[in-house]
Image (tube, rainbow, N blue to C red; front, side, top):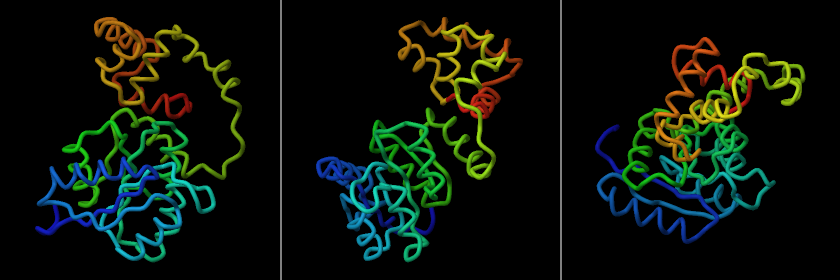
Length: 234
């Protein structure tokens, strides 16, 4: 971490009880690390609060009411003009590609889900404060896709998802179950998490993964994540 000083943190979420829970948890596990300097529950009050308190890190929910309807991404964009040094860490229940992509393209330094524990959340705050990017493992595929999409947003229209699937011989070579495993692995799930999600054994997951890599002629899960992100199927 930077010099031994408290990290000034603000919490943005439209659920007051959740804000209170986060603030309480951080105050408990990070009393010697963070200082809560503000909180807000809608777009306009969040922008005003950030301008007034100039926090080091903002924990930002994706779906925040008010403003022009842009939620967390709108808060981030509007705050840049007068709080350029503030770092934003998205903290949301959502793990959808659209939500992840929106705040990453708007400039968020990280994105973690609300399933994260207090100690891990504190560590994530420290990391983004120190200049690192932090993302929940299962969001890896979405993050890669967001960064790739940022440079191609003005490109010519892409074929529909259905037509891409129909014409993709590599994807169609996978069985339905192999495709399910592939998508979860590409999103950063562990074998244990995939097994729990699909109600199958870890050995079965390993078997499916081996077949997926063989059929797609890939060597590891990092290559699989890139392959899936390029096809926008994670």
